[in-house]
Length: 281
Image 1 (cartoon, rainbow, N blue to C red):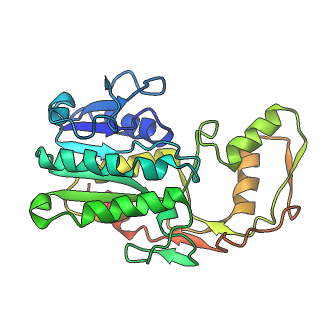
Image 2: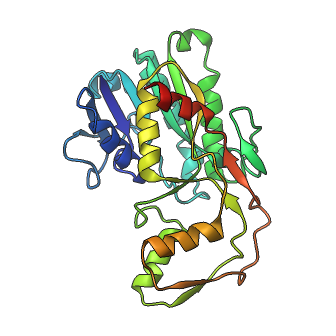
Image 3: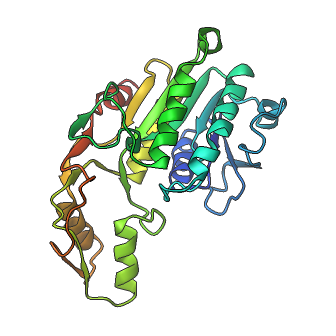
């Protein structure tokens, strides 16, 4: 199977490429404008797919892939960037181009930030009210590609992967964990923190990448698929676990910062669809 991964040099994309390469039956092509983080065993195509989204020969340039995994996204760690909105039509144009060109297997990376403030479990039918430009753009792209005219989607497996709180490979993820590593490196002995009582759905990057790789190649289950752990863990417990596993000396000062009103006390994903996929492959 010929598979392309856009945004293959990114934090998640590079791990998805590695997960796909584990199966020797796949011909994996990494698509990005940089390959510094891409496994050398993948074929690399240097192209800006957003600038070339409407190119009539783009599908041919990408090698006539049988499956497209669209991970590309500018400023993914900056949720207030205007690029999320400015790039929206290009993302849609690229996906429409792939579908119009004949690709029957399309997967797109979404985010739990599409949902906005929510308390409890998130399933594929949970109403969305995003609170950031990043969430607004992801939510809009999902709505756009799922309401294309019916003939456009005939016989197409269209999957939307909704990610939650990703950890692992922590120097690259720009999360609280990467910040802790940086403070440890700087020799700091402690850092101020919230009370850490909020509970989130954390998933390791390698597990996430494996989920995405496996779910992308199958065509039985599609639609919105939560790629998550399905469990809610307090931020306090996760931070303490991170310090222990990485043998860090720095210690958190819990309760120094007040909780943010827009942070849910508990949010996690219904992972029944991804577990069903993993059981059947």
